[in-house]
Amino acid sequence: MPPRNVRTIRDLVYWEYAKLISGRAVGDRRNYRFTMYAFKRLQQGRMTPSAILRENKLLVEGECCCAYCGCTEGLQWEHIIPKSRGGPDTIDNMVQACCSCNTRKAAMDPFEWYGPERRYEIPRIVLGKYLKLVFDRHEAAGTLDAEDVNADGKLDVYDLGAVCDLDE
Image 1 (cartoon, rainbow, N blue to C red):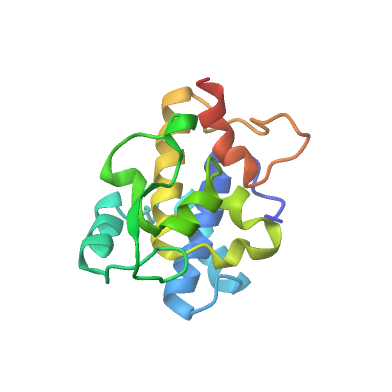
Image 2 (tube, rainbow, N blue to C red):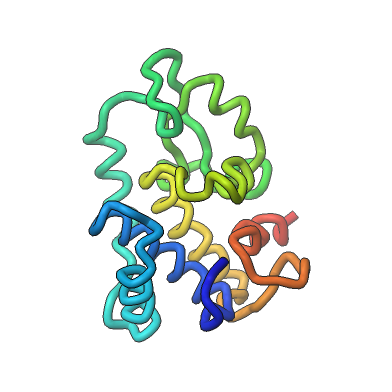
């Protein structure tokens, strides 16, 4: 659950990105102190999320393996935000995945597929790309300052992907 000062989609993206930075900087996405430091810097505009080019560079330079399980057999391109939910058919929205992971993920976004109990296991490249994509989608839809896009009564990571469903 995000802290009380996470009130909008913009804040939520910054919070999730700060957790991603924490994992890279201190090796633990649950490091609250560093995460809060990064989050406040993002909110204040003193830090910005890196360009999606960083994730694409990781994709190109990385091993040829499934972004989700590490398998090296039967790889195919997988859309992080499924095309059926309005995800773009571009490299910015794609990672390599084995047939099994691609099939099981189906039309879910990463948070839906991993679920609340495994949210800290979403691979860095997948989460980095996803956060940048949903930020851009919410910005285009004018919902970055919205509080509950999926209208379930709370602001949480499932509101991030709700912007994709608005297009349908």
